[in-house]
Image (tube, rainbow, N blue to C red):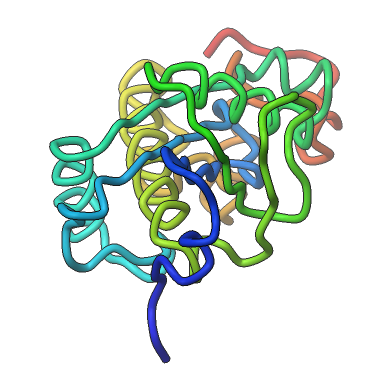
Length: 202
């Protein structure tokens, strides 16, 4: 099966930004979005949906993308996730990622089934990270940036295994929650965390 291409992008004006997020499902940590404007004459080979890439390949491609493309990264905090819910926090992170590009795109393609509430020209693309090179590049950057953040958080909040599980509700993570209680970086609005009435400062 062919990987992502510019086939769905060429009908749109340039500069075109692809946008994707990482971290909607975890129990802990922020949601991170990336926006990428690729130089179509200098596209690093191997760009694909981040979920199809190993950690080493993803890290290598993230560095190469940053060398040749305009990249913006935006985050929505755990507090914002709990206040406005994960969907709209993801939209907020996407807005911040596009704002951080330093270049105003003429068109934005967003992975998923909706776009943020903004006025800029945009279109959502279901499964965009597997179809559009710009969105796939954004998926790589978003995933890599969030993974790095979670590894750093793991050093400050040891015991939950975030460097490995990235905040997802793995059996080991859930076991740590039962032993340690939630940390300040756990999403209190998520069911596995909401059951705890007290929040430790672990």
